[in-house]
Length: 149
Image (cartoon, rainbow, N blue to C red; front, side):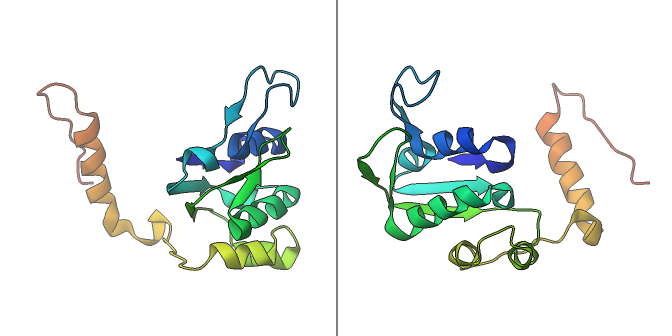
């Protein structure tokens, strides 16, 4: 399961991650499971984790530590076993020092950090990527080409 954390407001992201009970807010016409529950015994990718508002970071930290959460509008806890992979284009250590990202959440998420340099720092990857996408989007038998220069 993947959630684009930067594309949703705090309240929508909360509902998306944890689900909600019918009547919890205007428009909540049925019970809904969130991404954590849907990813139980699997993996949840939190894309653009650096965009999560500081208030929601505390809730996320609690879910990671306690392995349980409450749906919006519910008082019962739901237990989950979820592997979390997070991505960001921000330097989270800088965000921690600026007070924009919780230090305790940063250390929980950065157990195995993988840094991928930008494509401009690894231009030798461009031909392989171009070839991959050309093959992926090719229609019919007519080959699409990009000249080397």
